[in-house]
Length: 137
Image 1: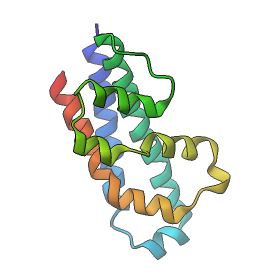
Image 2 (image 1 turned 45 degrees about the vertical axis):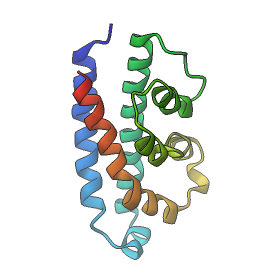
Image 3 (image 1 turned 30 degrees about the horizontal axis):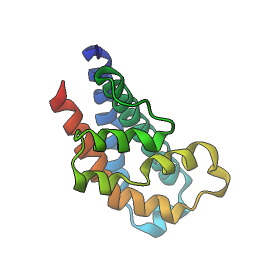
């Protein structure tokens, strides 16, 4: 059974990360790219927000007895296959688990313009998935 206290704590942290990302979104691309404090803040908080959602997703998968994910990308896919995540939201989440891996493992080759585009275009879907998970508690 899913420990609601654990999931609630992760959702609270997710909310904190998303608030920081909202602040960082206010900067234009050139300022974002030139300021290490700004892009570093975005990179770390995007990583942690995605990590929270993957962790919660893994808890849901385990609790419901769904097929065990073999990769981070499988988490969202399995939830989609089991109709936890609707089609449109799933389509907007595609690639975010892989992006988490880039943030964690391939940071030496990170394209900060890509980080900025994900920040501007995908953060709302992280928020939507967080809200969906919160409703499930």
